[in-house]
Length: 299
Image (cartoon, one colour):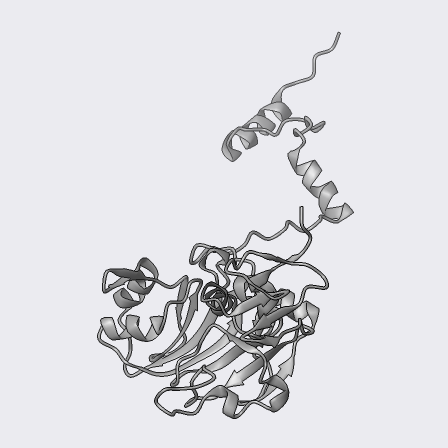
């Protein structure tokens, strides 16, 4: 079995584009290996192979992954047909070869991952991986409780069911929403379908990695541990019934308390005292006088 790298993955590691974009380049005949055109994205690239894209040689680069706090007003694209500013107009030259993982629309802001690691990009975006993305959303008016329930059960938009994994009210107009499979403009479309408008939307977490202290428009490289956190969801919290407090552990009894408790449980011992006279006081007095009058017998 060949130990080479799949062609689409190899091209993505060279910074040519995303895995999907590389598939299209291969299938359209833009790629050659050792002077011969290759149309199969799954073709294995062996060490020493000479790979060209549109006549230019490409080589695998060292993988780099950074987190970026995308500001509002920028499009997640290298070029925009409408002439709008893109995230690459504010990113430094050293990051221009990295590709954004997923998208945040022009009016949204928050955590965005950029990488030339095609495998990581696939894990974070493929629906089957169910990687959580958490958002803080501000609506134009308070959302009814029954509408918040619909976010979790599902809202049908153009025959597509859109739902959130979790929804939490933070204030009258602010909400925490967690998605696993984010469709294009999903949160905005769900609010709009129920009669609301999103005024602000910020992505604050992917997997278990959050923005932390990263400033707006700032970026920093991620280490191996942080890249691993991107791919792991938080552990679910154990739900408790409202009003039910966790049971407290019984305190250990002292030696004196144990002795008193043991005596209270043991059966009562019979008393050695003579039984008390149960007659009424008047009868007891009469009995004493009669005893005095009775003469002693002589034998």
